[in-house]
Image (tube, rainbow, N blue to C red; front, side, top):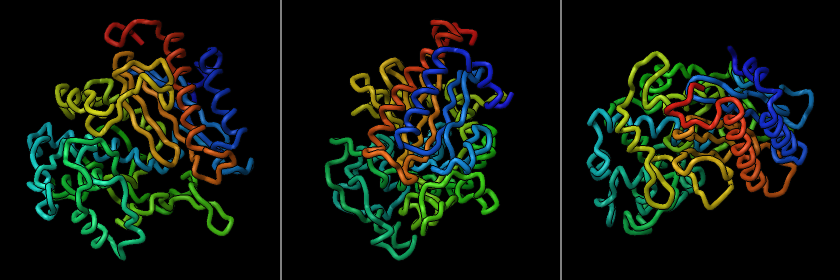
Length: 378
């Protein structure tokens, strides 16, 4: 059953109608021109639907859950870099509490010997959030050197500061340890085993008609050009951004976590213990790579996801949240950076995502009942 067909099963349910109203309302309000929502469990797709259009033109394509590709932006951190690190930690090739300098000796500077791989994953390295590498560096080699030589702003382990630089460094750790480019390693060890055939860095030009545009050039929509200019400067592949994927593939990825580290074919990619280590709440509502649900805020996650739900968002308007206790995932993909017609589009997107998450929990209850994932037959 395709994801689009699966929606037909759910369209009469009241919670599915709530999701329709939230997303369609955000499009009418100008928050984003198009979106896809997929709600599912370990075994079932409860809802999958595309809304709006690729652009603000009603003549442009309607996003399709099975085939439309999105620039994931920072979802790259948890869909590529984090699982790569998880596999290497599970195999004993990388130690979480080892200094980053063990793998990247050129990561030099005062205090940097105390920065560990765990610090990078928890965003507690002491590095600043961002560097405009596209302005500071003429090429990828210079950009890499600038990141490696960037001084710490805080003592490692004392402050959570969400930073793209952490994910860049993690991507380079993966490459050094595996002796393979990041895109090759994750394709072979993550995407291929999970059946994620539409997830990739640097998609071929032939795929551009299927890619939702994130910007305009001289009045024309441009698809397949990364929104994150630092990822562009780094050659289109980075630990922090650069990945493209479909909603169907992200559903496959979410199910890998709901199965405890096992593929749909029964292959174990990581042990349950390692997966639990990476998705356990740490400082500042961070897990290893992932963000944990903040029960004090309805943004992103609403009010009904369990406290141990984990997820992440991307600047372009993408997000994935996984509720292991309930056995539920929610994927919301939008191109909210494409000429938004609403003020504060990212703030309004957060509100809409929270409302979608609450409706997703309600849909799960309608279809699966209130039983926890461990005893549910859903």
